[in-house]
Structures are given as structure tokens and as C-alpha cells.
Image (cartoon, rainbow, N blue to C red; front, top):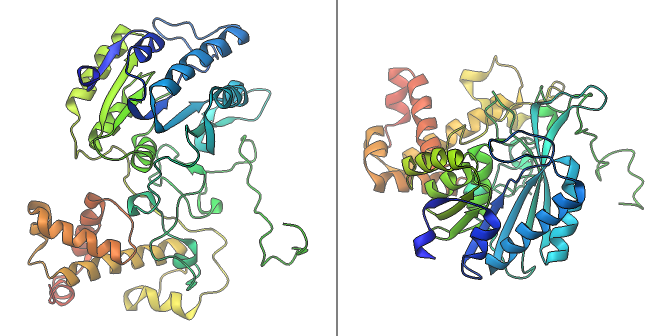
Length: 393
């Protein structure tokens, strides 16, 4: 197996996976051809439905064989065969843990049906009792609306796991949203993902008796959550090599297969340029925007959060969240008693202490994001206030 790692192998993925040792891979992510007529350079993406399903059974069977008993398999697929491939995967022996909808704006425009604006992401495991899911890692959690919006004491200060509808639109920085109405460009009436709020327990109407290149940040969420460092990540359809690049950046071992010689060469160059510890491309953390309905009431606690410098600002959720995060990183910095910001960029030890202090305060985010956020806050402060804010450091 060692001789296969760290490379994209040019060839058929079924043959390639069958040549790997049984039970040797920890995590597989597959984004196969959708059988919708897309023109690849060496593959015609237009089979008869029966042939496509048989081919899908063959490569998913090979994936099942190569995964460890506690292994995980993620499948990205379009509408046309999502239901069929889910059933086929379950027949092979996979168990579906989540059916995630990756929602995005600027979807494929359709003339006689709703605009296609999502991809299905199936999360499968081999053993329903034994699999990797790093739910307690703060990098895999997002802020809780209870804590950030409603000042609810029941909110977990460590945040919560993301919803299973992932909103990662192009030209926007957020990789999740606290509530769907937070985003102006999402959930349009002519698109295929529709939003209707559920009837929650506090609603008056509650009766009471009846209850093609993947973004690196999206892949990072999967790799971080479903594998450990140094474990093996497989991509049967390497394509642009994004899965393998992300896995390598996150200090995983990788192996991939790609039918196209040109794609394999280009992907190999991209993979060679990546290294463990490199930041993922795209915004590492969301800019948490406000719901437009935040207009009527502002609680005493939310007013106090804004502080004197924000008394005249609007009562927007984004402002409150931003100020809370800014004050949090300042508090973490002061708590660590670090001599200067320069230490955070040059010395690993104070950087770890600062990140740990942020974690203890319930501030999610990767190391570079937290340090950059602190730098941004510092840059906005007047010189006198800088001395005051950092006098305890």
C-alpha cells in the first residue's frame, strides 16, 4: 500500500482499487460522472441508465472492499441518479448516516424546470456502530444561534454541528448560515431548494399533539470530520485533485485514480505543490450575516454587547456577532499575556496558547483565521486604545 500513496494513478478506478489491499483506506470521497452528457476528454458521460447503474455498482463495490471496517464513504451526485445510487450503495453494504444538500447560488439555469442549485452529498459508513465522526473538535462546529442570537443560557458555548444543508455560494465568504434568511441571495423562489420554517414548539400555530470542482472548504469539513491525521484518504475520480490536495494539507495520506492522462498529470502537479499545514483556499470561516427581520426588538444584553463605540449603529445581528468575536479574540490575547502580535505569527507556542484561549471562549475557527481576526481588530483601534486594550498582555 505504501508504494501507492501520495500519487494520482492514471487508469481505471475499479482496476486500481481492486489492486489495493482489502481494508486499507480510512475515508473515500467520490465525485463521479453524473451521466448527464458532460464532455470529458477521454470519457463520454452518456450511458444507458442500466449500464450506468451497473458501472456504479462495480466501482462502489470496489470502494466498499478497500475501506477499513470503520471506514467512511462520501458520494457527491446530481439529481438524475441520486436516489438510485443511494439504494445501490445500501445494497452493497453501506449505511447512510446523512443526506447532505450542498446548496449554491448561480446554479444551472433550466428552461422548463426550477433552476438546479444543489448537489447531493451522501455520507455512508460500513459499520453503523464503529466509524470516525469528530463531532467534538471545535474546527468542525459552528456558533450556536441560541448563544449568538438569542443570548439563551441553554446554548452550548462550544457551538454545534452544522446543519445538513450546506450553503457555500460563489463570491460570498460564508460556509454555513445560522438561519436561511441570513443570506439575501439564497433560497430564491425559482430555485430547486425551497425554504419553509418548521413549526417549532414556540410557534402559535403549533398544535402540540403532533411533532464540477469542489470547494476546498467543503471538502475540508468532510476530511476533518471523518478522518484522523495520517489516515488514508482515497478519491476514485481525482479530476481536479481537490480532495487529495485538501487531505494532504490536513496531514492525511492520499491515493487517487484518474482515467484521463491529462487530468492525472495536472492533478499531480497540484498535489505536489500542496503540503501539510497549508491553508485551504476560500474563506476559512463564515462572515455571519444578519436576518433582514432583525428590526423590532433589541434586548438589553444585545445593546450592552455593542459597547460605547457602537451605540449609534443599527441593531443588526451581523454587527452583534462581529463585536462578540472581536471582543473574544481580544480577551483571549490578553489572557495569554503575549508580548506582541508579532509573536503569534513567528512563534508556534504563543500561537497555540492564543488559539486554545479562543477555543475555551467558544470562538470557532482555524489558527490563521483567529490570528488574522485579532490583527484586523488591532488595526482598527486608535493608538491610545491599542495601548489600553493590550496593556494586560
